[in-house]
Length: 97
Image 1: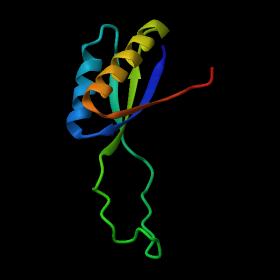
Image 2: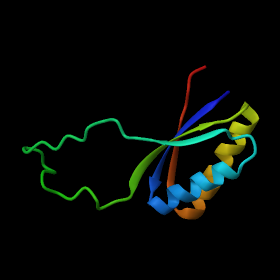
Image 3: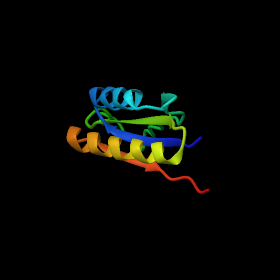
Image 4: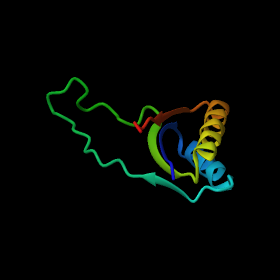
C-alpha cells in the first residue's frame, strides 16, 4: 500500500479543502496531518531575531494511504489541480523504491 507524503503551503482553509478532497476519493483509507516535530530555533544573535514568523502561509505535512499506485497517481493529480486552483503550493516527497 503506497503512502504519499506531501507538504502544502497555504492557509488552514486550503488544508481543509485538500483533506476533504482526499477523504472523498474512493479507496483512500487514511489522511492525516502530521505534526511538525522539529523545534524552531530562534537564536538571539540571528539576523531574524524578533521578527514575526506569521507573515506568510503555513506549511502543513500530510500522509495519505492509497490502496495501489494507480490510486496514488490519481491522488497526486487531484491534489495538484486543487492546489493550483487555491493558489497554494504542494510538494510531494519522493520515496526510493
